[in-house]
Length: 434
Image (cartoon, rainbow, N blue to C red; front, top):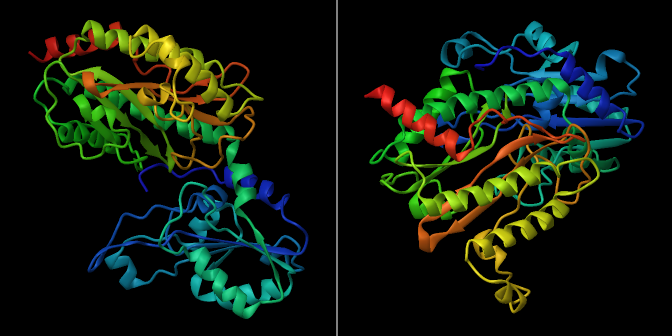
């Protein structure tokens, strides 16, 4: 891992919160993500299961956590199972956690090797009545590949058919929604790296550079600042491509007079940043581009003030659509009369603003939590209004990451977003490079 080791106290507190939610005489099992094959003899870069990282801080494959709080043997109430390294693994794959390092990272005192899991788990299960499994219950995403947790469920049904199986996912969702101070600090670091990267882009972008070259500049700055990786595949969309919400080809030339929409974010210690900025390729917005940009920015500033305890994403979306509709009318995209006569199933506002305003963010860029969750202090959401007008080659989105509170705190407040500020920085950087 590229980031410095984190203090185990965060993971110890996270486990204590989880233990309070388990029913008596239970054992919970959380597996790491699998290593995913890339080709004949290579894996894709490993990314840890977010729940396991949240509970242990262990950023390594082939790891299992068991929690059995009522076990008569105190040494078996928290167990972390890790890879047992050897000379061959050390030579071919490099360093793996030692038992001492695993203790220091996670705060778990009982460390065993994966080879001991089957026999140990049998002892835990026999002393428990309920088994919590951590299955993927994301509303919008059902992967075709079975997870280690899902495969383990099949083994349980054969070996322990009389046990009650409980769902861990709803509990983990509720716990992860509100961020601890250390988590907010890690996300602030991810946002700070993203800020440095945006400044680098402003220096680089000019007519005739390619979208993939911009992406390369982003990747360079992320790695240079110890980011774990991109938090998601970056969107580098110039001209009409900016109207494709999840455009990731990033293979076109940035033409003079076009806008460049960039949706990108650093991942630091597995915590995500999610930023979008839209800039003029030549360093100067046209009057029409500026008019549309200012409309989005004004909506964004207002929407951020609504990220307060007691509301929901659904309610925020409704209020933002009302604002956006007014801006659409001002921009001449349609009239109030058109709105009165519109098909209720196909509202005009959705033609130029087809997505929502917010999503939760944390260990996952689209983090746990849905649009009906009542917001509380310490939750973190994006705020990302936009306007997309394909017939005018205009696609604009502006996005910051916001900590919910009576006075919402913007983790990206220092990343330039005003028209004058962006133009001044681009022109200053370009003058200096001559």
